[in-house]
Amino acid sequence: MLPTTQKPKPKHRRRLIALIVGGLLVTSFPFLVVGGLLAKTNWDEWQHCRGYTQFNFSQWNDPTLSAAPTYVRLCMVDDLVDKYILMGRSQADVIELLGSPEPETSFSDYDMVYVLGPERSFISIDYEWLVIKLDAAGHVNEAKIVTD
Image (cartoon, rainbow, N blue to C red; front, top):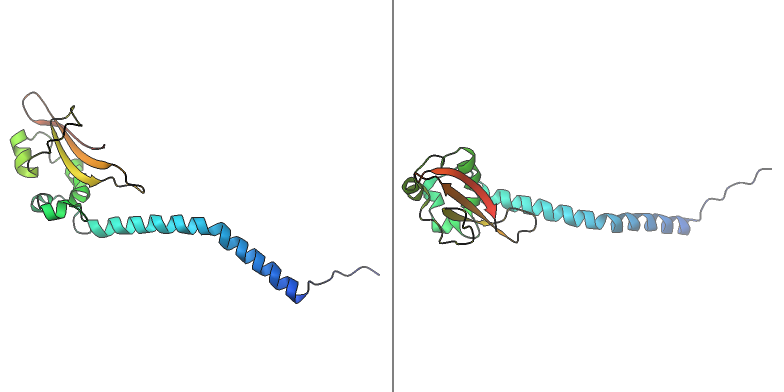
């Protein structure tokens, strides 16, 4: 006669199931936390940019919208740069459109600098800036977004 396999006792079966479930929970917990943080970050960014993604002169120059917690300049700058709204404009036209540039000396290679807000990344430790270079005639020939 062949030996029969013994079924685990109910107490041992429950313990085995609890160990398997507990191990899965402990293993997946870090992934759930990181995923939740990433989802919250993207949700927060979507919330504060809603309605402010196209360049708008009055909203760009509104000090209450340009500062915390909204930072609409961060939301609008991609539209501003991507559509080449600045390219070829004179320095006076840029100042009329964007306001006075920052008295920022960290970007000495550029003629005009505008603060946008905290870096758009998972861990935001730097600030983003719109930097503009002028040609010899005083017209914009480069506009890009940089971090400090």
